[in-house]
Length: 343
Image 1 (spheres, one colour):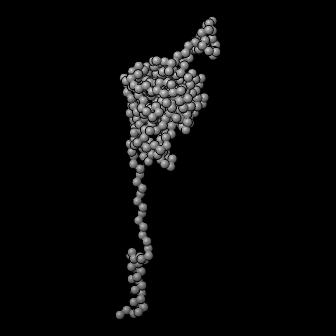
Image 2 (cartoon, rainbow, N blue to C red):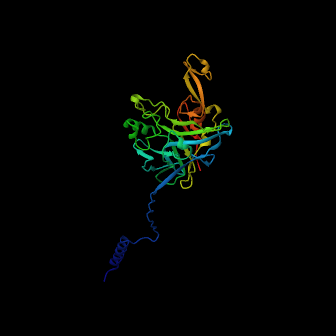
Image 3 (cartoon, rainbow, N blue to C red):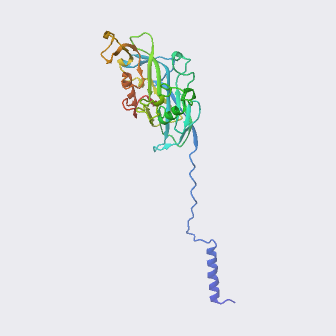
């Protein structure tokens, strides 16, 4: 029979053994590990674009009235195309979300940048069938994938400088340029036009539409050593890439508008007169105004806007600010861009 001392020792040993084998104080609290937050799923998107004027649709077959000075001008588009690059989606906190463009004939992804071509016009309908430029197909959307929750959309209008440089440097002929970079160049290897609008116009003094208006935004001062732009520099002196920022953008329900009325706002009567400079020889009476350049002067004028991103072109002075562009520096301000909006 065990003694009292031995009995106490056995009881103590048994107690310690039970505690070491999983026994616990009833006051202990056990918490499970939190479930991992699921990674954002990759989603497909379609960003749609539309040509408008004061909110109404525009196409090759409809004449848009009430534009220009005193709302007395009528316009019919003939060729309307532009590049989009640096597409960016942002969440409500302003964080930039991952965005990737699909590869197709209208969209190009290279190590030097991505670009998409929007083409509003074909060459088979309305006045577009008379266009000197243009293509047979249209494209009004950008497609790709993204992750996150989109609240705001931003992009640049035009070809990125690095992509332009790489394309021109590696391509000896425009036919070898990757699609969609086989169009909208000033002249091959001299650089790209970022935005092209050719149109016919008429004012109250005319009875017929005059097919003589061109508004082209493109980079300037790009250098042409060996006949190729950007061969001796990384960027053009005047980049001229309009910037766009659209807050509160719903990819499912909103589209990007490009407004013809906003584009032509602030245009002046004199901007619709295109000057022809010629050598007047010995007859200064041929000069229509007092401007001179050596023995040349303005000897003729035709109705229609002409802006090819030249700092001295009157129509450019009026129209570049509508895109938020500084004509003398080539810099862009998205807050001043009234041409691009959402609907």
